[in-house]
Image (tube, rainbow, N blue to C red; front, side, top):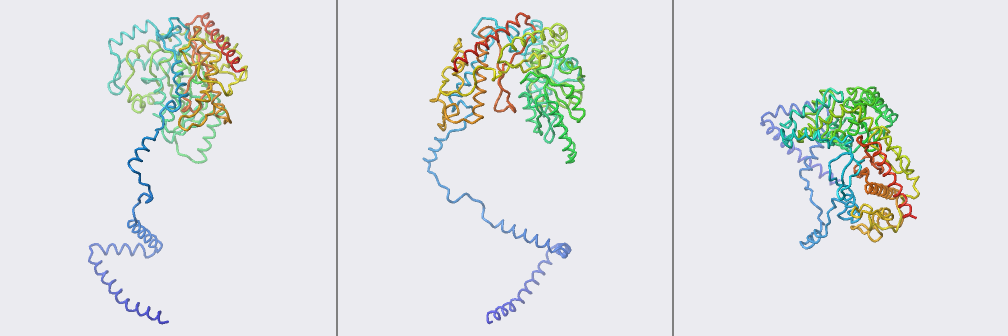
Length: 582
């Protein structure tokens, strides 16, 4: 009771002082210039909104607490290292390798063998070439120069004249004094040849499509892509940062389903307008298939998409006059929004192009990165490309039937090899030949105990050992197949293996098997190649295959001879592998 009375007395004594202090504060506040305006604002703002007063008071006190709180500091219990300990840690640190071979000797040797297996030509290109290490002329089924224009004497003479007039290179981007009259003439020649309104010239074929796509499709836009497109197209839509939707390779039913689903979602979610593209190839680099252009045009018009067709492998070789996929199907080139292609294939020169309407072409002159920032195509190559187009246009009635006849001959003979599966369109000069695993008298399953000491990729040994082709497949012996960093056994040794490890080994062995066929064919006078991919970056890396490009300037007898050599090489390699894996 006494405590309560004492407290009341204290508050009673304190009250006059509080009244005096508040009155004094009010007098001082009134002397501040503009204080009455602030007071009026506060009174009008808060008299009918007590919740606002509480919220702002809380924010005010939080700000005071934040300003007065201690700054963040590292943990107090951090161990302080001596200079010697720091030096020891630095000496022990191993940076992440830039390439696998830095820490994996097996992978390093495999990469070196892969590079060593690449043939080096000592003659000009064409259907008949010479390979380093031999004076022998071999039949060339590995070059996209299907008409032999890269080594044409007439075109070389024209290029020499251009070289003397314009010099070696343009040395400037097209927009910065790099454009010459021969470049503009080539653009007109390409547009006229294809049947498009206009065309733009790029210095490189790879950079053409990888610049065209991001020049139009941006973040927030949509690109619907065939899952089998080549690496250059993948780089293009990756750079664009657009939303990507894949449809099954050359499956128009799946494409239609995807487009209908997207349209339904746009309507349901009431999405704002955005740009939509369909991206395909004329002849697919990774398979040799021809895109069904009529259905693609129908779908793009029905669902209001823009269609981009990459024609590096179809330009110059499809259609009665080589004008590409649009002529092949009898569709006007103006029905396709953008036709992109390479001049380094059938035309026998270098560079790339995009053909389309005038607004599309002019937009690229200011927005396509490789056009704006790369030096223009050397003028002598522009002249060579124009001459190559003129040759194809003039000689098409002769060279197109000859090429198709050679394709039929080579396909018919290769189809006789039981393990060969012909993937490509019968009308495509690019033919992919894959191994039908179930038809082989052996499997590509991992085999323990086989050593990698004798790689079939070792080109210094001109004779193919039947056992070498198999023993080189597993990537290392038990003694050597340990990771150099952690000393753990890899999947090539004994013990349980994951399914993906087993399939990876099968794919590697399949590649070695095909490389043995390539090597055996070369030793018997025919140059073919194995399709190669950047497996770590490909969206859907295809299975290994032989890649054969059929030239038009081989006679029927030479085409038959080349196909029979590949057939005999496959038969010999199959027998050698079957014997080695018994």
